[in-house]
Length: 353
Image 1 (cartoon, rainbow, N blue to C red):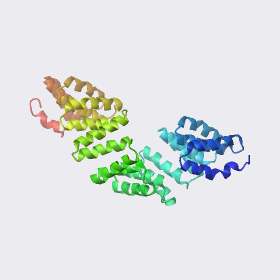
Image 2: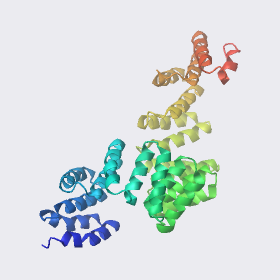
Image 3: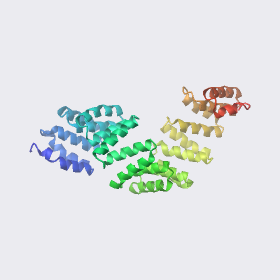
Image 4: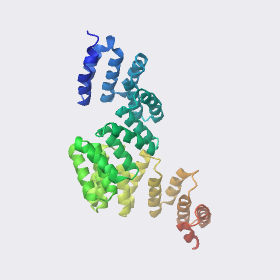
């Protein structure tokens, strides 16, 4: 086999990669592993495995490739993409230092830097990276999408919509871009446009959990209670391990006064995502409204070690409803100490609230 064959075929491999033909790319690359271009073949094989979602296969391929070609920026950049996929942000930041040294003007390197800074909540630095990438390639879908996501996280929704619209002009069936733009429309209370985007996302991918869940939120806000419940139910069916749709349905039922019906969703959502403090507080409020005071006090143990006036106030309510006014007063004093101007201070003037 000609030593230059792998170099000559890179255009073909790139086309296969762009077309998502990862299995065919792997098939074409494997025969070149036993040639002088093994490092290059390893890189492309790693890209194929990454595209196929076989992340466990990628790291050993890159580890060998980098020993053979330590100055190939693409290897370091793929390391970063892999670590970001594995939520290993610090590792991504580490390898990107090398990638930037080798290829400071590569768009994909700068975008990966921006994603990493976003994950680290270093938003201003992330924007600098995305801006730099877009100076080099104003039409970069990758940079526009992630800058649009960041603008959404920063509540700069008009800017988010502009970037995501630019993405959709190039790739009109990008479900994530459609969904994220819909969220920005929702936050701006442009409900018709939000609903249109979520409908569009579901036309492209009828099994898009995010679109079902988010459309449910729009319908709820518009007063379409049955439509919202139907959307949340479909989202739960599609991904029963995601807490968000269950939490949204629980909140909807709670607001309607259907407290008993909301409990199962609250419990399941908190089992799936126990760190949602606001959701747990809503669950406790629901238990208190139902007079399930011991269960409410049990749930409040989750907040032990966290000194928040509201938690003392909730305990005071539970104790008062149980008839233990002495414990209620103790909790109210703690609440007032932490937040003297809180609403619970007014309640203290009554007996005992």
